[in-house]
Length: 204
Ligand code: HEC
Ligand code: HEC
Image 1 (tube, rainbow, N blue to C red):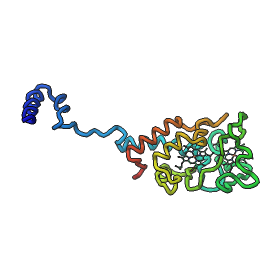
Image 2 (image 1 turned 90 degrees about the vertical axis):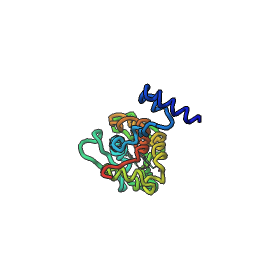
Image 3 (image 1 turned 120 degrees about the vertical axis):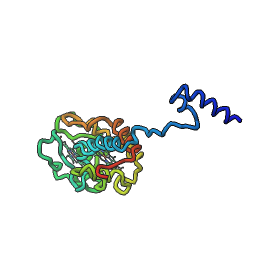
Image 4 (image 1 turned 30 degrees about the vertical axis):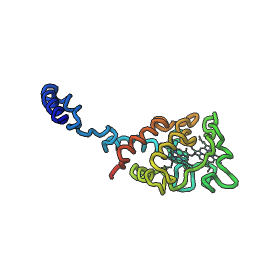
C-alpha cells in the first residue's frame, strides 16, 4: 500500500519535475558515473607525470642497475657520466669499505656548487629498483612488482614518496641542480590517482 502511494506520487511529480525528481527516486538510481580518476586515459596521464619524476636525473642517478651511481643532468654537463672517484655500490649500496658514501655525502647539501649533495643515510637503491636508462613501460612494470619494489603495495610506494628523506632530497637537491618536477606531495597524490585508475602501464 505504501509502495503504491509512493509510485503514484512519483508518477505524478516525476512527470512534472522530470529528471531531477527521477534521480532522487530509489527505484531509478542515476547511472553509476565513475570518478574521473577511474578513466584509464586519466590513469595513463597520471603515469606520464610519475615517469617524468622517476626518470629525472635527481631520482634515476641513485636508481641504477649496475654498481655505479650516475652524474647525469644539466648540472653535470652534456655527457652522462658515472660518478667520479671510482665509486662502487658496495655492501647495501653504501660504498666500498674504504670509501663509503657517507665519507662525502653528509646529512645536508654542501652549499658549494659541485659540492657533495647530502641527506640522511645517503646510499644507492637496490639494483632491482633500477630506473636509470629504462623505458616508461619498464619502470611502470617494476613499480607495480613487489619483487622489485621492496615488497610494497602501491599505497606503500606512495607513502615512501611522501615520507622518505632520500626522495625528499630530489626536490631540494642543492645549488645548481634542477629539482625533480612538481613536489613530493604532488607525486604522492598522482600515484594514488594512478592506483585508483587501475595503475595502467603504457602499452598494456
Ligand atoms: C641518494 C639515493 C637516492 C635518491 C636520490 C633517490 N632514491 Fe629512491 N631509493 C633509494 C633507496 C636506497 C631505496 C630503497 C629503500 C628501501 O627499500 O627501503 C629507494 C627506493 C625508492 C622507492 C621504493 C621502491 C620502488 O622502486 O618502488 C621509491 C618509490 C623511490 N625510491 C622513489 C624515489 C624518487 C621519486 C626519487 C626522486 C625524487 C628518489 N627515489 C631518489 C635511494 C635514492
Ligand atoms: C669522495 C667523495 C664521494 C663519495 C665517497 C661518494 N660521492 Fe657521490 N658525489 C660526490 C660529489 C662531490 C658529488 C657532486 C658532484 C657535482 O655536483 O658535480 C656527488 C654526487 C652524487 C650523485 C649525483 C646526485 C645528483 O643527481 O645530482 C649521486 C647519485 C651520488 N653522488 C651517489 C653516491 C653514492 C650512492 C655513493 C656511495 C656508493 C657516493 N655518491 C659516494 C662525492 C662523493
